[in-house]
Image (cartoon, rainbow, N blue to C red):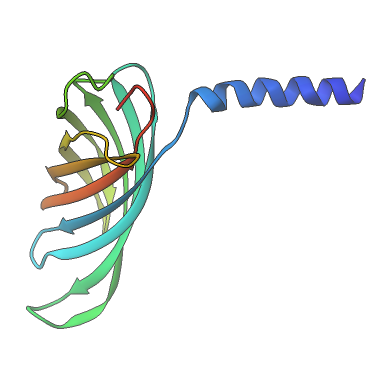
Length: 149
């Protein structure tokens, strides 16, 4: 009886978790305002409907206080939502718009635009531009999920 209850509980938990498949990503961002900080990072997103994706990412890079000197590192965290205009990858390239919160030295509202490309070797290339306390640009590789962006 305990085994059956445990199996039922695990099945109930695993069902929604499998439907909410995490799409991991690796990224390289150039984050402003001046002085700009190049940052490498990782993240993940999950579908929150047909068109909407919720994402979390962290990045780290050197913090520049003046032109060339580096006075340590800087950690950044992003919590964003984006709306893709082509959720089923019917076109080679697709736009997505989004926003959220970016935590760097302090919290900033973020506004982002993604241009997501065709799948290559199980990854989707993304070019991202936006504002979050300053201009930012990024190159992202998202793990492809079959049949959707």
